[in-house]
Image (cartoon, rainbow, N blue to C red; front, side):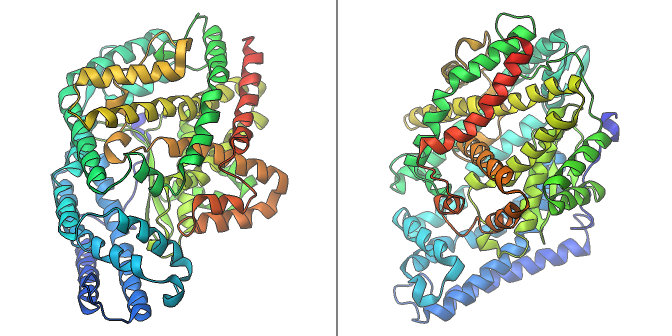
Length: 583
């Protein structure tokens, strides 16, 4: 299937278009719901020193109004962001997204008052029920808030600060092109050439990519300095111990849990270097170069057409969960997915909730099994959104540590099905593709964690130059990949949008992989009866701390033993790969 025939997503079910009566009505409705929240806060004197003592009534009335506002915001924000992410030169969409950010500032201005008010409420007195965690976390947030005036100013300035820098990164990178094999390609297509079986193509694409990033390093470094500088300043003003502490709080885990997981990650590096060495041997090299990380291994290099990807994913998800498979079938049939790489479209993949349990998925598909497993991964997010369809928006705000749960389960089910059912000649490439992804989530993501930690430490003192970002990136890669690689990627800080949109976005992926593998092992033990508890977990991810949810399955997240269980699953895959290639 050619790139031209890959699907683009269909938003008509959400909005027929940007300049339509339906969109305008939804916009006016959103404004009205925001006005309602503002009016209630004034009526109940939320944030005043002497609020009206009607806590229970005020709590439920205001929570209801906030949920209504967030429910109305969900499809509008997803629609506008989707337009911008696939058409970066769409000036009208860019302008309307900016208007939306201005509009939601009206809500953000209320947040300091709202949080302070929630912090003093007694969950039992107001009958908080499933909102108990909202109140408990408000107490912590209140301890780390600046004055109301400062918080409002910070919210307003972020539009011309961190948000603007992140937008600059997205706009610049979506327009970058590079010449490979005499053809000028969008940077997403250039990066996809890393999957080519021809090392000459991979190397040329790698070198062209580095040159392209270098040509744009000045604005991208300015964006990264801007984002991290703003965040670091605000973290200090809010009294956080360091720049990691608020990320741990947002992810609803403790330092003890993170330390236990990362200890297991670091002790696994020799295992992963064994995989890299075995892959190098399979490719006829002494050591891997960076451009070999995604190289296919195996004599049979199958091209997975879009139609084949659909059929394989739906068929095998149906063996796991009929509902999960039905969501995937709907996503394909109703064009929830934008799969075509093109100029003006951002790289990577994501799934966004558009309301009523429905989703839209951005992907950059190329005919490899890695893209098939990525699709299954993103469809897991869509399944998760479906499980949250009846949950109020305030209780759908789950941490990144749990965001990957359904996607990892989906991906694991599809990969295991491939290793079990495909012809023997196909299994080695599938196994290697799976290990490529797992190595990224364990090894490469730890390098990203180290890099971001070092950037924050240095950015607190001054801005960093592009060369310094590159040096730190290579240092982090050396610390994790070690001598298994002969070359590295100094511009990975420019490639990954996560550095610009969120802080320490990295370690939750490792958490999600190992936690998901723990759940998969439990599914193998329990079979069909696992599904009800699993869907209940997915529906309640916004209501409980992560450790409490894990305890429902008997998992102790502060114990390295739990994390070794998931790593053991990966170790078996590495040993199987090494034995097949004679490594």
